[in-house]
Image (cartoon, rainbow, N blue to C red; front, top):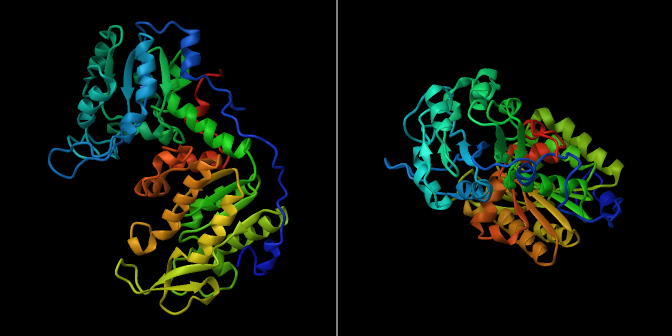
Length: 437
């Protein structure tokens, strides 16, 4: 069974209206921005200071040692950093860390960047000097004293309240440290902050690092120049955060598969009883309009025909499988059901480009992880047969890694909100600020 309107058979017979002949290429995009190799071709970087915005916001252990427990984001900055060092540049690393909200916090997840120094030294194979501020006379002196191939790490940019408000003074202070800027923090590229956007105004040239460049090419390429059919698998708890994405994808996709807690808002729009399942009442009408738009455009918008129910929001809950139109009483839906996964497998199997954003259920609880893990496996299988597969940010990335399939998909995005905004077709401030190629 397939849901897109109250008349479920309508979309079962719907044909895909998109052309299937276009191919996916990792080529420069319509948004032609300078990348790090382009920067090196324009400028002799030997001995030059390059300010590099990175994402060092890594998880720390909960003991008093505050050691890095997952160095994925640290490893992600290595290619660009090493490339700049090979060109003889002095690299000044700049990052936020947690949410200190303008306060100086000595330790912990919102504190100083001290825990990443040793791991960075090991990954880069060079010494990493650190300063205890990100602007000011002492920082400027440290930057001026750098010699060919040095690495300097600045302090947590969010110790300044103005960072998240794109404060021009903070941006100007950062701009005094270098003549060139490389943006390689995709996860914050959707924020117009001093260290992601404002600082570029004070640079001779600003370029995308390898990580950012790859993200743009995969995510924009997937939806703007896909090898069709193009399938988007959209999950997550709240429909309010995903409606703009779904609406945008209706203009680009051949099929959209929905899962997660947000499906119950769509069921409510269809007049179904949803029991105690989560619902965003303010978005019921919009969900109904979205289903109608999909029908008018000839796009398959597929809702799960069955769900896994629980009698409470807990791992030890009693569970049952029910058709989507048979939920009642105190039961709540916490995952998609087996019929849904068979349907999703068939749809994914027909597509050549697949984007996955958001879990299918409460995957943190084992009884309700099957849907998300199965979709992750289907993504890996699609990759094996030659499809382009992209996992876009946040919980879906965690789920794919949890399933041990992180290296079995074409691309895993490092940004949650940034991925969504790019899929929506929005221009990211941290990208718009870069120099033209």
